Image 1 (cartoon, rainbow, N blue to C red):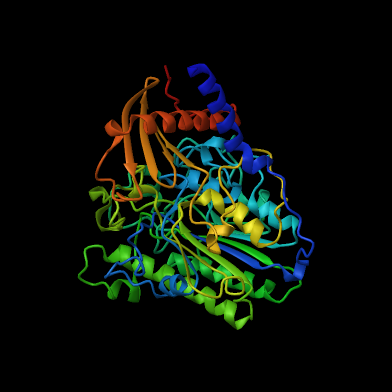
Image 2 (cartoon, rainbow, N blue to C red):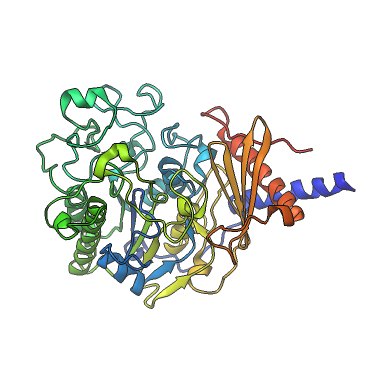
Length: 494
């Protein structure tokens, strides 16, 4: 009987995992013509916690643009980053797959490959002008030695810049830069990098779509969010009234360390311990407002989909970084970046698309960054796009329009030796050491969102069932990953 159960379970979970990939698509008889397609903008903040916005209750942090977006558009109250660190989440945004499925399981591993299908490529096929601005972190941008490479990526094997991944226009860095004077080494903090100390430069550079490094004297001083938006605005204005739509993927460095602010943004938080953090976020928020005003001026606001998210929760304060790091807030949730508790993966998320969703909407169903690609493709009228691997996300259009309140497809998370399997109600957290589960936690997120009471010992059947599902998903990711990079640790079951 037990064997029959597991055979059925394996069949059911296999169908569940690959269903979004195999499900037949629905053609729309009135598919929009090219000029009728909405513009698409994805905005990503780096290491911005749930509690780092005014609309989520922060009494100090000023985020008027995001607050207005949340009050006018679709506010997600249970939105998750696909990972608790940056690169895997960014992989999920552009592919609809968990980063581990691509071999990108931590912040510096592997890269997007030629056979990976990215949202930029899908939209480009639909006639979109495409632009990437800011942090890329899905592959190196330089085959030589002009860029400082941190982590295990190597120029000879991990070169995969945005301009060979579907982006026409680029103003891109591979990794983080200081959020004020982005080319310069901060004057405080232990960054532990001799090459940078010798040059006085930060070491990560901006690159264009021709593969050329941007000169440091080319308007690269002051607030980094403004530096980025100075390149976004011309792209938007140039494409605003063309026959074709545009896609802008804007990846701010704020408020990732080195988190530095200056000028009026620093002055408005004088006396606050985290004044640089607060100032960097407010400066970024101002640039989001600037972008929305540009859309209004060009007549594109109603026909533009803007989706704002963070790539993971806020990082815990690191005293070695002086006043330039770790003052973010994940309140009221437990945990930090690098952890799979809610604080490490539950993120602020707002979608503004006035012509489709003219009234405020609140979505309480659990959603994840892997859901973004299939949902965006639905919103532009293409439910028949093709990818070459199972998708970990789902189309959440019905949740956005209020006809679905319960998620029927679980969400898997994995980072280092830790993994999570999450349903609408429950969240299973596991740790695998030497092939064995060493720590199992189960939380009823519907009644205990702050993860105060581990009920694993009282719900053994649920733990067992969810563990089996998690193992199936981990094995599926490893199978998809092949030999691209490292595999996820999978516990053995009796």
